[in-house]
Length: 496
Image (cartoon, rainbow, N blue to C red):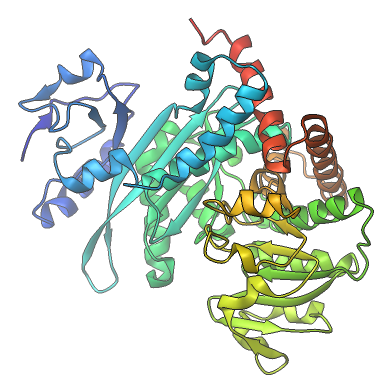
């Protein structure tokens, strides 16, 4: 073992329930490796009180210190260094921060304040031993990044995906800070995840993984501290398991997580909120330019929760969804999909009803509104010239990367950024959180009316800001959100 922490258990590092320590010890010992059970990564210079507790070798790289919660060793491996650094090369986190700095410059915010608001407040990286159904033990890496609490407790989803890494989670946590400020709800930003392919998890493995993640992260979670929600690869049922595990450790607090099943303290309307919000934003964008909503042709990339409910909401508003794709394929429906089609489990089930399409060309289909609602990075320097839609609504997180955003703006394409377009999910989570705290459930009609009105208000605010500063909707979104976060940050007296 390269080095160990001499029993560092304090409120900064957190706690590991005694009942779980031996279980974790047994499983990690079986791997014959030193496993990091819970750690927090801090930028240099390392706190003196922390390095004093590390023997004999605080860290192989002096610029990074790892704080440990239990049975841990110093991070001297290349993998640990990767977790501390995030991506080598392109950084999604820096992509977000560039927009923050640009907005701050427009608002004439000082550099020292900008440095404070772009930094993540806490980054937790955990090792999660998972016993597979066949008896194997896999060691997975989990994350929780808390970006800001300037405007309230942190809020953000938990993602299960094989490509999850620290830089991506940082970027998504940062986006949540700006997103919650943009729609004016009392939250800050956070994000979590596990680097795992959820399709390779059995139901038991999925449940054990989220419970283990919760046990390891419990010291940084809570209804007024950090409230998780579902994201890619996780579901309402996943959040139910998380809530149950949290209750075992901390007592009954249903507001500890949102996106739960309706029968388990969830909110009617929360499941559809992100997709419904996306379409409400699309409608507002069309109306702002005096374009017809009725009959507008829509293409949706993604047939998961967001894409499916976006299609449902678009059809309810008289729009025509002419193409859709997911991991199983793509279809082209010139006369439009029907509400019955949204009940299909995957796009593959629609193959017999509509013309099959190469998924790689879906984004290039001629339409009025393009909604990328799957993975990030799908519109890039390689294909941006072939995007023909005059409106792109970013239902996914960061679907437009590199120089593609500037290229679309230069061509006059209206791009509604993710921090606005998919904010219906966090707005719905706010409604659920509020109801849990008040112990009073709203009707579905009230939920939808509140969601539609507040999404429209948020868009109109951003649209007017873009006109005032002669900038894109993305830049305007950051101008609004950065201004709000900085105001709260300064009022709290955090700058010395």
